Amino acid sequence: MRGRLRAGLLLAVALGLGPAETATSAAEPTLEQAIEKHVAARGGAERWKAIESLKIQGSMTHLSLTGPFTLWLARNGKYLLESEQHGQTLTLGYDGAIAWRGNVGDAGAALRIGGVERAMIERDADFPTPFFDYETKGYELKLLGQRDLDGEPALAIEVKRPDGYAETWYLDPVTFLDMGRDSPGSEFGEVVPMRTFHDDFRAVASVQVPFRIESQWHVQERVLNVETVEVNVAIDPARFSPPRPAGMEPLLAIAGEWQVVAQTSLHPGAPWRESQRTSTIEKLLGGALLEERYTTATGQQVVRAFTYDRFRKEYRITEISDASNYLDVQEGTFDPQGRLVVSNVETGTWVEGAGHAVHVRMTLADITEAGFRIEKEISTDGGASWTLAAKSSYTRQQKKG
Image (cartoon, rainbow, N blue to C red; front, side, top):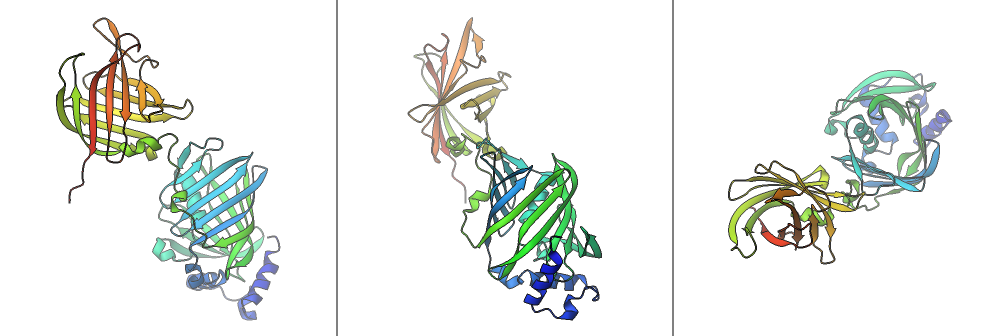
């Protein structure tokens, strides 16, 4: 494989391995011996423990396109790959819990990844290989013995992970560096065989790092040609997590448990009636949806949802209750005063009352971590004039204890 055997012999000399240790005819090592030799060949456990992160840069070729890439790897399975395609940035990320993909050409979208696609990222995020602290990670290993990898002899080891996916790693029988692996790949979510080669190992901070990583699956091939590797470069841990959904940042503060003082007026000039209730606003889908649930003083159950349409640059609030059994849809944007103002004038979800089309307008104002206000207005002339009909003041409930 691209001069690997010669490179392996040179590395064996550099590592001070004797003839008995470099001979391919030597007795096959046990699993424990193979792992020990692999860890030593990669630089040793202690040297790798001193490395908290890697910043790897170079060029990536995928789907016949070549462009620059930056790969960040950090402890606890953190992974961030940023590459350029057609002048746009493609992002793959994993924060140790959530795997995600940044939409090319759509900075507001971060699609969460599951199944075999997530498994692919988790494999690449293993730091530095699965054989370091494999028992702590819960991996099951099995020595498969001598095998052939792309026409070259290799020592094969099966790795079973807690997610249920199995893979086969191939170690150079001379140097015990990782030659590559067979693992599950993904073709639009369908599991397909995938083979990855590791080549051109070079010393970085006294450890060995592959400077060429080639992956092949189905009809696809991806080649990473590494140019520079930096160790222990600081990166904000938040960068490994999916970005917050576009437009929702100003609303995320309203998620939580709330004590609400509600006031209603039946008609203009009527006295305000005050009541109290609690409300829960839950952040769902990574913050792309905020869902509020509450029960009014008269026992009416209400479900309200807050979202943002990044294509039309509008916010959308929907509301349904067990009294109306009808979904009202209101749309709008933030005004210059920082208030979110939405109505159903344009959505056509008005209701009919006393022979009139009754439209609703809602305003969210003074949004902070401690509280916010909601005002509801109604119109019977198509939105030409509005009458304040309800107002609610939200105060965050204090945690007990």
